[in-house]
Length: 254
Image 1 (tube, helix red, strand yellow):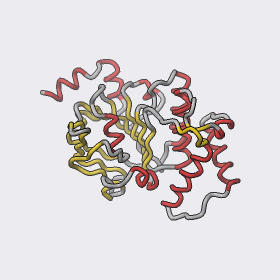
Image 2 (tube, one colour):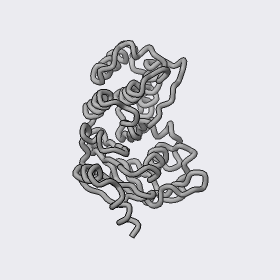
Image 3 (spheres, one colour):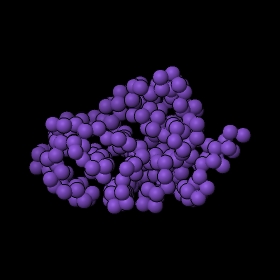
């Protein structure tokens, strides 16, 4: 069976410096994978390479989506076809409201799926309100400019709201827990859990175990120096929390 997302011996460089050095991983719809690793191990490089950031050069290897090599696809094409990235540091877009942004993004996604007709305004508003209620987002959120003056928790909720509206097949969450207090972390995690299911695969990139208390992965992978050096179940995250990365780093270097 062809994996939904298959990363095959991926090597990535930034400004000529090798960061990922032969990373392989498969993620299917219905699965939650966590990528953990120390600072500088290549976690955010992986997220940016998957979504086509031009600063991250794929020097060898492949990124396959439903068996098709998407390494040369532009970022917007990847998004339209069903890949989604929640950024570690979401960008503000003054002048563009959350509602208008979601409407345009949803239309692009529907068009890529073969549906040329926009969702009627009444149906769009109903869908948006349903998803906002799911994430416990106030209705006033829709009229605010994207991430402009948002708190850290609001920025992350805005991204999970985008995920809820766009219904991607694979969601890459790059350190979604970064900068969140415990209440915001719980709300964002509950939103991810509400969206997780047989039609969505999640690749959760994190430095700390704490978010995994709320979002339970079936698979945990440890990234060190650009390679996955160990994989296991959710118990591996608890092992890392208790003992840190030093032992795994030393074993991988031996």
